[in-house]
Length: 364
Image 1 (cartoon, helix red, strand yellow):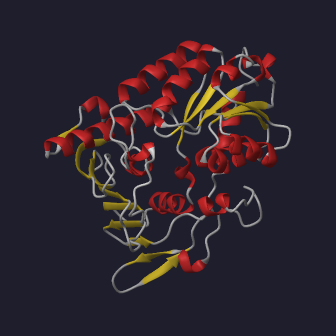
Image 2: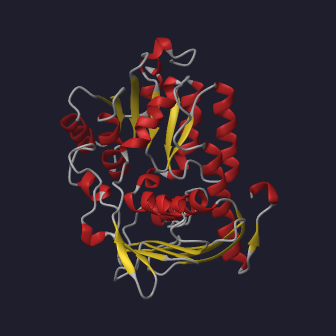
């Protein structure tokens, strides 16, 4: 059943406009939108001539316009806008979409502050439109495997969760992501940290205290490029989260320690590399890891490999289509993304004041 007001906007086919066709839009959004049943990529917004040509080559028949202003002029032709632009523009573009009666998927972080996120959520409710934060790494195969093991009780009582996204990027690139300018939301805490914190909250629930170390290590960079965040969950679990641009050698992606067993998992989910290589989502063996990359579960004296569940990024946009039809709730709830932003702000305060920051009971 299509929600009231959407019948004239395309019925069961969700017509999508993608704002931004840099690496995020081109690799993490467009291929998934284009291969989702019940969705069509109708418009791409980019002012770059090379990206325009790429969009028209990869998606024949797509309309390419240079600005969001041009998109709003044809808003009756669009049901959903996907925002894959620099962080500071995420919430303003979402607000503009709601003003034109369009649902919005917004890349992480969907706002540069928790206050801005709450205002955007209020605006979406007032407009009766969906605001869906994009947290694709909830569908990483290794993360899905950890969730399944947790649900099975394989760890016993979990004491500590360690999670890392490490990179080797010793030279600054000059990207806005390396800028500490207020309002830009650059740095690894907003970037990879958004995934790390979201996953920890999803696994172990609300957080009651935060401690963080945020460092700038590379010349020419003004936002943190080396991050450690410790979360104490109301459940009693402690999450230790790491992100670095200066990890010259790999470290475990996950380490989960419990009263009955521990899991150690190396290597990143395979879907990012597949998307960048041009492999179409949903193809044979999509998201499957080879056995040599499976995690090891057990104790000091006995452990065994655990087959990784297939990664499933396509599930996000399938869930978006279902939510727009009114068949299911959004695949990511906006209140969950606001809770993540609350934790980011607590981490910033902790690093600045060099102390543990307690979160108010309403945030827990």
